[in-house]
Length: 183
Image (cartoon, rainbow, N blue to C red; front, top):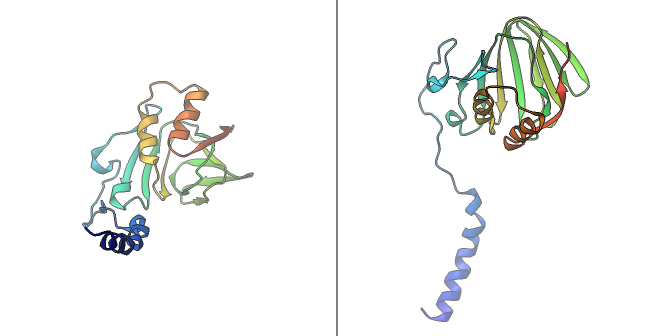
């Protein structure tokens, strides 16, 4: 190839290189509707929090190209996670049954059956189930690494040491900001 032709061809492709980050990626988004039955998980995946409380994926990240994930949590014990942040995700909780205490920033809220709460991204938050049993749906928008986070903590056989918990949160794009709620 002559030098002049090479330079002309190279210059002509430069605008295309600038668009490279905007090229579509293969979609995993589902193209069919589906039903996930009560107390069941998408793709029949089983995940227990603390060995006793099912945390079922209802709508998976791959169903929405990562736009959101929806979970059904069936709480069989009191308690909740440490105070933490999601820098890149909003969370919404809908209480199906039971009583919960939420902290969002410095505000605390009592929630019960039928209540909904919005937790904006990058705001420290946590919750505690204060009734013996409870059930809630919650979603992350966008999905981020939350499905993998719940798989990871679901595989633990004992509560992790603080440094291990911090690493698990970091690996899933979250940061622990303080202890769980006292109730």
